[in-house]
Length: 132
Length: 376
Image (cartoon, rainbow over all chains, first blue to last red; front, side, top):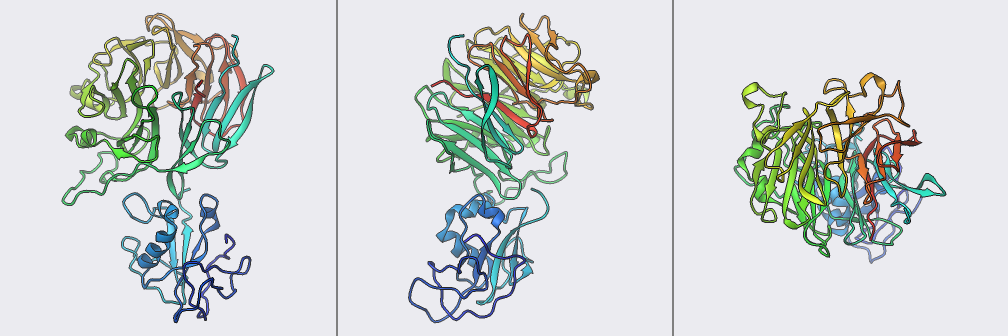
């Protein structure tokens, strides 16, 4: 689950309605999602985490529902609370040396993360090239 | 010595190394957190646990705990600053012009709190928050009585952009009494387990301030303070402007020296049983943080700072540019084994109270902290 391909690429619309137990096929980031629960009726964005972070904490590539970057992250962190502190600081702000790509675009609203995300898009959590 | 020496924990810019003496030779036997900056490590003699603080460049501050006898560290909670109250505005930091960030930047000190058998911990951080855990680091709370002191708004960075707490020294006779050293915010004392605080340190002198502020206790830069376990009223401070000694639990200080070749430095270690014996590793001065003439020496006093000996046996006699950070000098329980590490990645160990030194390695990453593993 730590082998998403970068730079992030736009994905075609998913045909499945993945939920919390959904993962991508290992080693094949263009693979259709497979689900471990019955199909729903709509696709949701997918969250992908830089392998650099995956060195520190288990951070699966996984679908998470939401219409904004903030909502998708909140849904993702709700299932993986151990990741939140690596991406957000203790005041709930995006860490200075972490950046997000929303549908392949650099996040514009780093403060409130209000960037809109479409159901067939990816939210990529990346490390900034500054710092470190 | 009949016992084998305690292992030495060396926290570096690129991981935590453990050195052991085997057949007379000190060797690195473990490298945890390879590649990650380790800013502090505590070997807790009460529990046998080891707690390591990381400052990941991208992903923030992390704490890891290794239980006694365990092989691996497990991540635990970090101190978190509480949400900033509505309506509060932080004044600009005089050095940066920007408000002091209200968030955790670095763990600079970890210390046991409370009585033997207790699992409480103190944690000193940048930007100046003191935290307390009552459960061995599983949960933390900001000490608000210090954080809310009006004087804190006058603290400023020394070594880092923001002020930080680097020294926490409970009184072993009465652990509810403790000292906290702040760069730059002076020395603070609590006698009620952190419930209330007063600034101490009369006699400390700050040449980096305007003359009328030079003796203001609240703006001093005590690079490190240590307390003699056997004589807890004896406090040694390696200050930005020299070496200072207190005989009354840090209420008042006298300046020692200045010793040759320099009284500037960051680290100090005190003998566990002899309060008059302490070690320092001097650098030239603030503007030249290198050994004087490239000659690395350890300063030792055995008479409470009335005289100092610059020891060079086993240390490079020239072309050495090693700087020793404040936490990178340590003495073991016997007072005989001393270790220090430099920002250029060399580690030296003495087994005769600092009289002579052995160069263990020149190839470590920059060294932040050196600690002896506690005997449990």
